[in-house]
Length: 247
Image 1 (cartoon, rainbow, N blue to C red):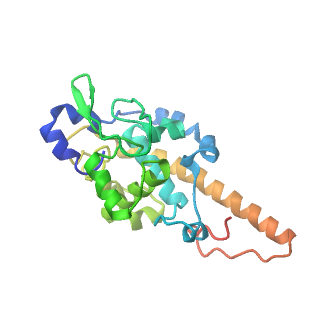
Image 2: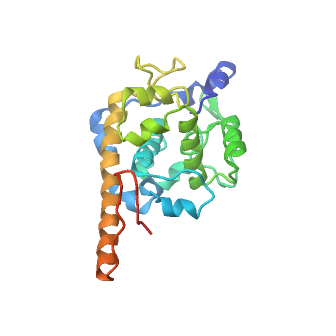
């Protein structure tokens, strides 16, 4: 849940459920990442190149490192759904929004709890309004949700740590004020609510990033072979986070 959740939980005690991720064992993490072959056919495996970014009005390139963090946020927030895109439609309580034309801005009551959080990254309505004003995006589809989450990561001064490609306690702590499911350095929720264990987040992230880097490398290898067969010199990548030469 995004950073203004504390205010909502203060005035709506019922909203606490949306701030309470479910604890799982390492075995459950392994079971979840077993579905990662679906990465190649869902947004959970989508990565972009600088060339693609130049033709898009959206500001953030999606590298394997950034996608792995986005997927880990989904895992922490309970919208991972084995990597399937249906997670982008999830509202609090598990129901699905019918349209992704806009944030549903609808308080959902579940048992004695309530929240208006929605989407893969459980944006609160006022947080999404900030994203729209800052990025100028329209709608509430998967692509703009990804961009909105990266905007919030950058706003928390965590994007550079993300690009290192290591899930550290420091990175999780920087995101803890934004997503209540991430632990502080003390291993607690920033808002004093139930929180995911760092070890579980780290395990999920490592496996996910490995899969994403394999996808990137396979694409680069295929491009290199295609360029070689046509007598074209393949572009030189300057580092693991630069997805150069990708179509």
